[in-house]
Length: 230
Image (tube, rainbow, N blue to C red; front, side):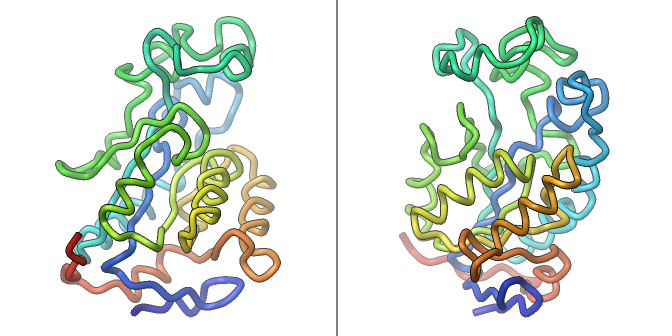
């Protein structure tokens, strides 16, 4: 067992053989200059600051043999999996499925829907395409984690107050112990970032724990751990 002593609200202990690194929605539509997120007036620099620490964390997790799972938010080309409550949000011409700077907005298979080059999944790393904010809704993520006997999640990605928060809440309800890496999650809005992280660790860790990626890297082994047999 490994312990991240600097986590809040208390030290976070995890078994690397039953822990996965979850990388949420690090997609071009959200992070790249000239993309959908920036077209809405957002400062993508607030999200792009996560790329460097997440790159280092990915390398450390892979070296330690941790399971790595990526997610992408997006919809089928015919939008049949996008409910009206989501489809009709936003200004006309800037809604899901509309032509955007990097292809149709949040549509699977479009250039903007894919993960940024710096964090490209390696062969064999699962990529979960999700139609909702949470990574468990209408996906096979829970079954995938159960098959690998995963009980702890190191959570990274964007945005902190939306897809990260929703996923952590879903994970908590399913019994996963979540550690959110503060420097590897990002929001377009600094205040949402601060409050979102505080909410996770509040009341004795009501949804999970919060720490920096350097705290995790300091305790990760440098050689692969033995994964449990399924």
